Image 1 (cartoon, one colour):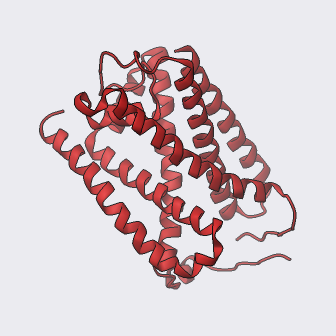
Image 2: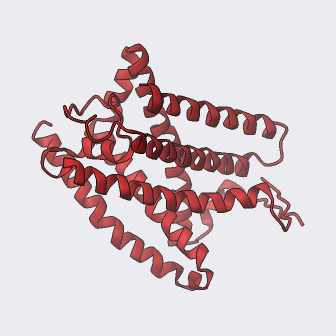
Amino acid sequence: MSSRTVQPGLSFEYVMWIFTRISGLTLFLLAGIGLISAFALGARTQVDLPTLIRWTFFPNPNHVINSNIPDVTLGWANAFWQVMQILLVFFGVTHGFNGLRVVVEDYIGQSIARPFIRGLIFLLWLFSLVVAVYVVLFS
Amino acid sequence: MGLKRRVGFSAGLKYRGGGPMWAWIFHRVTGIAMVLFVGTHVFASFFMQQTGSDFATTINIIYESWIFQIIVVFIVIFHALNGMRIAILDIWPKYQVFQREALWLQWLIFIPIYGLTIFFVIQSAISGG
């Protein structure tokens, strides 16, 4: 099992500990804005649950197979919602992969594989961000 | 100042931490599950859109099926509410003494949100949506 050293001051673990809290609350904020906007932009009357969730979290023109609402691009295809999607993706992906790193490092302890696993998770995080930003901006 | 833990699996099973312990375990499990499921869904959507791959489409059909959505909605809502409880109690640590009450409150909030979502998911599944 793991043994860890706790040092006072601004360490990487401390920054990520704070980031986890802040990004979690930020995701609540972004989801709330998305949900309210989805209702305001016409989800009240014509939308089923998968489409509502899609509009809330990722209002992208071609994303989900189960929903084909024709006017999905009208209210959403602008720079504001692209910035919102990129923010959501950044906070979500970083929160998720940092959590994966914390859990994995909890169970592997101080082994020789630790830097490699950390590097692998870092590469996965970077790849996810690049793919997501590409989908948001150029699809 | 190192903390050494030498706790095996069977000894870990005997630990009776109660509700907060299970919330901690569920938080880890649902977090990993979310990285796995939602990450797979995101990459499958990417390849579905870019290459029109049949495999990616199959993954998304499974992901968006109502049975899978019941599981995913549980995972997401539980992780979100539990994370909010953790964040609130970490911001105001003096309320940590009300840990168990906060957990009860968390389930009181969870049940109507999850129940309502599941009601609509199953309703649209029955009506063939």
